[in-house]
Length: 100
Image (cartoon, rainbow, N blue to C red; front, top):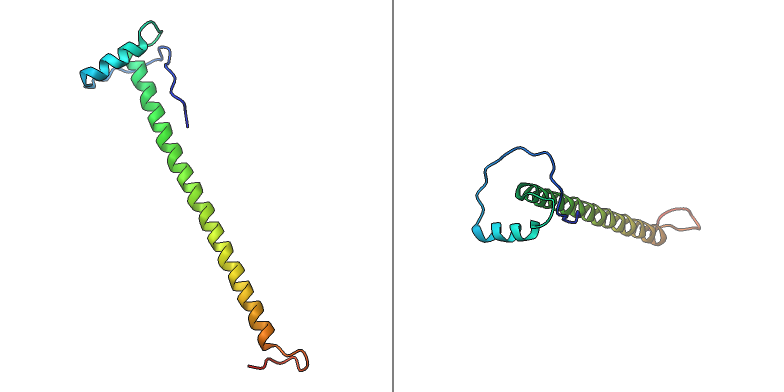
């Protein structure tokens, strides 16, 4: 997950977005006395949110794949144990035949 950092002024394209007044005040307080514009701050915040969202999906995917692999391995192990039990209970070492 990307940690949010207040950026310096990057190259930008002008976009018009409406913000609640209280949010504007909070952002302006944060960027005051720093080499950062309101737009640069918003772009960095959006990038951090996008990175965080993407990272969460990636983490969930890996968690799901890991659990799926674990479940498959448990099923394989259970099947092998059942096959061993079947062979042990049905195979006669004297005749080489099963005694089912």
